Image: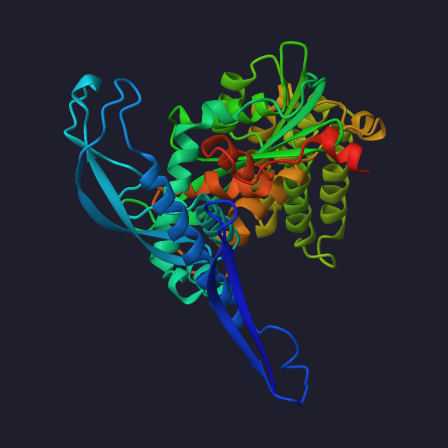
Length: 458
């Protein structure tokens, strides 16, 4: 058989290395696909052993280096030692940490202090980051199982631990939202298309509401780069700050031409008025065509044999009105629908029940179009010019942010007061900015390779 002994050589003082045995790997003479190279279990064990040696040496050296007060030079007195556990990607490592008595010259209120960044359960930024990222993309239990496949045994976490860590990251993202909302590029944004749409998620407590609405949106710049945002519909200031921060991240200034697309909902229009009052508001064509589709279905429900003429007239008039709205003749289109509504309510058609239903739906459609008449441009002209007329891109944002992870087949219930933290984590993951947030919080976290060094090395 074959045997490999892996040793770690540690050199605290130059010229005097110390050896530690990290692990042993043994293999038989026969080779098979399952026995080639390292197994996941062996890799986990090696990494856990290596991490323990490195962390222990780092902590011991740091604790020994804190000897005297930097202000007066007087030697610190030890108050004692305490045990703590560092939780990292490569396992949990026990640490013995020294406490020191505070020097009188500092004038601090605390009588003693710890020599190391530690609290009851210190967690490395890498572990927080990977846990939050996985939890944003898959259910908490699945994230825990997935991480358990690759992380050493002592680093494995339960679903509730994954959730708690993710929520803590979300809370910190909320606190430092202002600092993280710096523009992605130095150049100001010239054109921006913003779309809002809403989706419902189940409420954890059935009362007072079974579900609540989360508004999701996307801001697209000229190059098609998307910045997502989401907030719980509550009528508070959260909406304005969420959208405002997203716009700032895109580099919006006074000169930026902003176009806002919504489904005409009064609440969404109010948010648009607060965040970008000078932006052009456009009623999404997708929602208009959906309403016309509904009208067409009702008209097709009229008996073709007995009332063929009635059915043909209704379908033709609906088609004319849709054509007028598409070509910017909003007033004529609405008037055409009004005329059709009055015709459908004529006493001579009392024997056709589907016409009554059509008349009722026509009233609702007319009311919807009248309320949003100021936001209906010449859709055909915009379409031919290659400009956006629909929130199809926002429908996908609702799907990405809410539906895929928070609704659909996952029978999850959410709390309207804490869900914003989770939404923030998910948005940062989808926008690809979670790593930047951790870099902002932790010095030395995944340093970005210097551009000039990359050019020189190439």
